[in-house]
Length: 272
Ligand SMILES: Nc1ncnc2c1ncn2[C@@H]1O[C@H](COP(=O)(O)OP(=O)(O)OP(=O)(O)O)[C@@H](O)[C@H]1O
Image: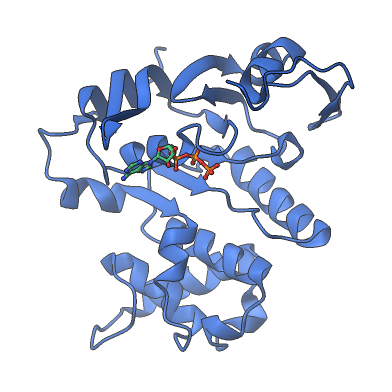
């Protein structure tokens, strides 16, 4: 049976201040897939996520999300079908908001609890999502008192609250210590393994953060898609060297990846 296209970028270019921050990117994400997006600082990863979230329009080209075409769909109807967790959204959460409310308010696509009423069924869902991410005993705490790792896990529970068909996670492990990172990778692996989970797109800077059960990778460099496809085809030393501008070796141990410089200098890291 043919898989459904969940997200499609067709020859997408985004120009800002006269600069092409994405150049002719074509990328297809199908039902059931779990993608990582890799690329160095400024490569265009967040721009891709913003397009995929229906929060930015391309300068040219076509973006299809959940069988709707950006520009021809009411994005306010589309957005509840897409879960998004990013540092920009996290910064908008008031520090005095209760953790349970941070997740609950997502069903209304807003931050800050203000005079809405919620059904018990919503509250039960918010509590169980927080429990999945190890936050069951912190639902009454305020967001501002959480550690960075706890905030990240709360934000992913929030992104899942509307039962999205597509979940976009922009650098969820940034700033976490080793233990917190491993907890997050474990939680994302469980999510990725579950057949009922939404299609996942995870932006990261580190191949070590690719959770088990992720299936595909998109490599970006200077706004160009260098490679896209199954992890084992895409995560090659040649592709990583082209992406990061330095010679790298990559190893896979069971379901986890790691990369390091080989010591051979290509000299183009800062000159590209
Ligand atoms: N509104 C804008 N106006 C001008 N330039 C922009 C704008 N938004 C993004 N850019 C530039 O586009 C490029 C891509 O940005 P983007 O945030 O998508 O990269 P990224 O791969 O997510 O980077 P990082 O890993 O550092 O978060 C960067 O050079 C950035 O400065």
